[in-house]
Amino acid sequence: MQEDQINQEAGEIIRRWTDGRSGSGRWAGEAVLAHFAAKGDDFRRYKGTIFQTNDKVLVGRIANRRYLTDRDRHWANVTSEQHADVAAIASSGNRILEYVFVTAGDEGGDVEWWRIPGAVVGEALKRRESTRGPTAVALHIRAVGDRFDLEGLDVTKFHSALTVPPSEMGIEPVEPVAPKCTMPRLSLDRKQYTLPLKKSRTALVELPDDLEAAEVDRVAAWLRLVALGLGEH
Image 1 (cartoon, rainbow, N blue to C red):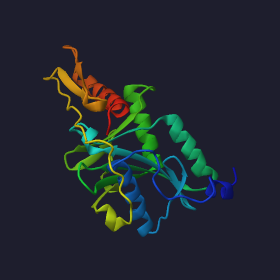
Image 2: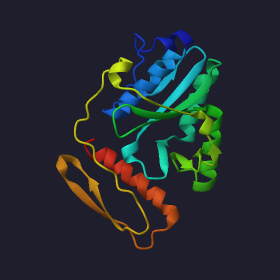
Image 3: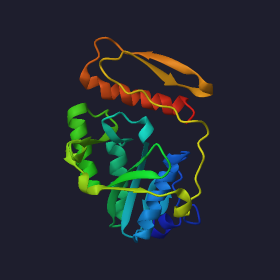
């Protein structure tokens, strides 16, 4: 595909975060793009949550604080195959590949993000697969002491945050379709959790007595995926 075709995909270029999410998740992505534009990086939408300028390709991921465990500051699905695909897109246009991992706060315009070079994310993917196997898909950014950690890599210097009302960003907020629900915080000391479903219903999840500490993150990630797919958020 030629460069001008990429830049003009779907006709008129769109600079909105259009991943289908509602509420503060979508607003947070749009707020970060507006912040980048104000700083000189006027990213245009390529497809999904991949954005571009003439010299950069930016891959976006959004998480919401209400769905994260106590240890996590961001959680996203990224596969090695996806990374290879976007790296090829960037390389074909001699552009820089970056990722932006955006976390929306529980309230209003609280947003934090990590804008990380593609090479660093590529190294994080290699580390994840070496410790958790090739089928692992979740990348975690965690607060470790006074720094932020991505699969053992210090990504503190890539962190930024802002608190801005949507009206002041010139962004139309999207109202959530239902009141927020709180995801369970997993621990080895608690075996039963209530999972929110649609129409104010709930499901009771019971963990095995022999659950190991190393398995807690995997179970927490599974519960988040179930809640996002079945719950009304």
